[in-house]
Amino acid sequence: MDYKKLFDLSGKVCIVTGGSGYLGSACVCALKDFGATVINADIKEREGVEDAFIMTDISKTESFQALFSEVENKYGKIDVLVNCAAYFKGHGKESQIEFMTDEVWQTGIDGALNSTFRATREVIPFMKKSGGSIINFCSMYGLVSPDLRIYGEDNPQKNPPNYGAAKAAVAQFTRYSAGALAKYGIRVNSVTPGPFPAPGNDKDVEFNKALASKTMLGRFGKNHEMAGAVLLLASDASTFMTGSNIVVDGGWTAW
Ligand SMILES: NC(=O)c1ccc[n+]([C@@H]2O[C@H](COP(=O)([O-])OP(=O)(O)OC[C@H]3O[C@@H](n4cnc5c(N)ncnc54)[C@H](O)[C@@H]3O)[C@@H](O)[C@H]2O)c1
Image 1 (tube, rainbow, N blue to C red):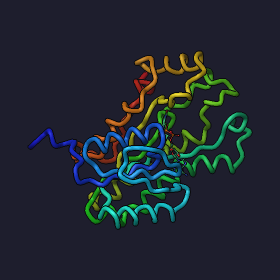
Image 2 (image 1 turned 90 degrees about the horizontal axis):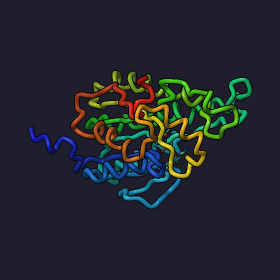
Image 3 (image 1 turned 90 degrees about the vertical axis):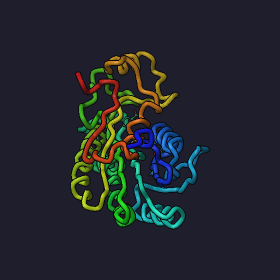
Image 4 (image 1 turned 45 degrees about the vertical axis):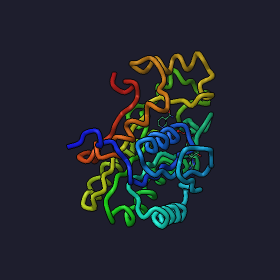
């Protein structure tokens, strides 16, 4: 066994949805640095190190179909799908259960959970040909509830209830998919980020101090600190891992 090659992604074709975003862009960089061909599938283009950008809307089944066909036509296969993109709804007053409309609730569920389902269903025909790895993004708020005492009612960073409910469901859908797709050689795992505010989203100093102190390490994560878990699950270093969830939260959910 050549252990140095365990993380080598040469020859692998990886798609990262949300590759233009804060965590997705770090995943793109890490996969690329380890030799993969990387496609950024996002609704918003940005300058990045990816081999290709394919405009993709995760709210639409047809958009996933077009994405996967284009990647297979161009690169011959799909080895890794990172479902990182998500969209949300429910801020301010609307984040309160008693004022949240059905439409707001459902949009949040769609953006985090249904999009992961659509991606998984649509990639199966492509990935089952030679096996692969699906990596879903959950959230610490799918494991524990936000501490509403530190958020306060009107904080724009307050996390709505549909988000955590959907992310908890992504973890369960990951386990179900792992069992269902093992017969095709498709592994399905999830990663659970803790607090990783993008630079610029952490301006409320007092609030962010309170938030960061909820991690055991006493600070927020930086996006490159999320990439290692994705790299592990994308690579042959994790060929016996499926149905698992890797928590990267500075210890937030462990005490
Ligand atoms: N950053 C955190 O603190 C944190 C914590 C827990 C979980 N997460 C999860 O990690 C993932 C990435 O988060 P992030 O912080 O990088 O967010 P981000 O907002 O920086 O990136 C999200 C990306 O998704 C894309 N996107 C939005 N709607 C889309 C659509 N309809 N179709 C295609 N792409 C779309 C955006 O353009 C953006 O590039 C998300 O699933 C998020 O829920 C993040």
